[in-house]
Length: 365
Ligand code: NAD
Image 1 (cartoon, helix red, strand yellow):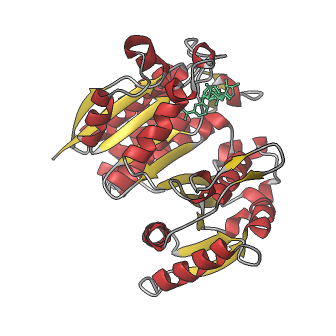
Image 2 (tube, rainbow, N blue to C red):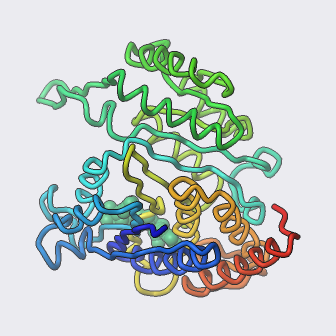
């Protein structure tokens, strides 16, 4: 079996963290005897520089022909004044839409070695491990009519049955791979579209009776993430609510350089760190590659169904942090400062060790 991986390093630190991610993909694939075929393409500002187009047909076609897409980051000050449709960020929105990536997954998992760096108390955070599953291609960001005039501004929050069914099914399926608990977030006490969302989620739940389902109002959910994040397993949200809640969830557990994500549709999947191209540190070897490497773990988990490999990557990251290696964004007293490449190297070394231990039967998580 050969997996076709399209690499879209993009701009700024996107290039550096993608290099780190590729090294990890190759290491893991080799250890499990899985073959990977890489196809690197331009996107964002780098594509605009060459083709005056941030997303070419060639890049899009490569993605259509792929099993998975890995993206670094796009954007930068150089392209900020371009018309909206030529901006690097427009390429990303177009790509997600073209690939039908209606599910966005962002984990909120605490690394024990970084627990003291959080703004929350250790005892509140310890054991936190949930995912925010956000509907990505519908809801108020895409609803019509929309607009504003001198006296009024308006948007439309709308969901179709099909849109809610497919995201709810995805949530229950993912919950089956985890602790089998879905919390569906809405504002059904005020919004009709939320009552509709809730009704459909409960209909879909009839086919997933082994998974526990709770409903929670979005305002309460925002409070609960900060008050008692351990209670959650899979948080199912619409586009707008997920946009906000995933940022809260991400920030309680770490820095921007640590946050991975996956965007998944029926046919395609795209993995990317949550952060942007970080022009302030680009090209200096300062970028934290852990968000990108953790996105690779999600790729092995969700796209290649290699849960063991994903766990081993995550364990390798955890071990590196316990050993005290830190990039500049997460450095603290007594820790060892490393570059992007060195951090990737540390993860790979630990991965090899964990893999070899597992081979002789002493691997524990
Ligand atoms: P950013 O995420 O690029 O950076 C915000 C801050 O976090 C910066 O100080 C940066 O140095 C730091 N940071 C981010 N990632 C880091 C990492 N891996 N290691 C260490 N430090 C890290 O956000 P921004 O500055 O608001 O945006 C810069 C550009 O990126 C803009 O053009 C923006 O539109 C774009 N952007 C792209 C994406 C994407 O491609 N998915 C996401 C967000 C922003």
